[in-house]
Image (cartoon, rainbow, N blue to C red; front, side, top):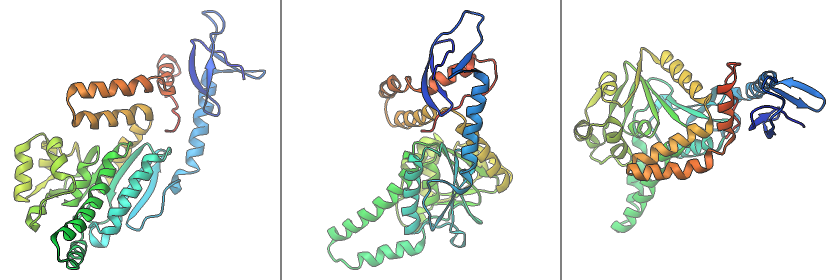
Length: 343
């Protein structure tokens, strides 16, 4: 294949494999790509590549390609590159049992590696987003502890069980793809752990939130205490909510930064969340995933450590095709958005 197009750059051609573009002609020459004996205008080729990519996604996204089957989660793909993970225990108000703990970790680890996924939407089926931990799971902990007399053995059991729960919700935060939590109804206990591990939180106007663990005689141990104060920005309010276990509504959540947008009902919430996810998915996966990585790192480190981290990251990633692709789209007069490869 011979490819001629000013200026010198790297682009994707037809099958989305990189090809070198060489300067061709004088200052008045048109941007052309020569494939064999045929000369094709650059804009025509970009359109062909974009249509080909959309056709391949249209053939797949309705069936959630690459996803495992889950018993407590429903995974679908409402738009290309947008995956929707729905907590699916509506009869139990989406209370988290042992199976759901395991499946959340598996699901988000899987989506993190799935090149067809660029953004994840997390919601709940039925009346509530999440009613907290399933009481039956707490009872099973007691039964396991009763099998041992020595405190060291009991501690070993609890360490394993708590670790499983922590790893489950940390998988949401560690997923390289942005996660949007769409909350309706109640979000209690473990639900607070889920949404504070997400990147963006929207809710309905009738949603309410509760860090309920103190009312059950235990300390929250799955991430809420570690993440919520950094999200809301007010250590005083975070401590009040934790120490009292009181409910707070969507208005208070919005005012204090727990959520960034409130919708009238569940239908508009999902529509708005999917629209946001679709907008993000159209951006460079290299740029978006790199931004999440560095935002999370900088949150837990000094400014200088964050700068050093992104320096090391970008000295590699600035060489990616996405940068050249974006620059070429900016200088092009076609007005067409760039097409990015999967990551």
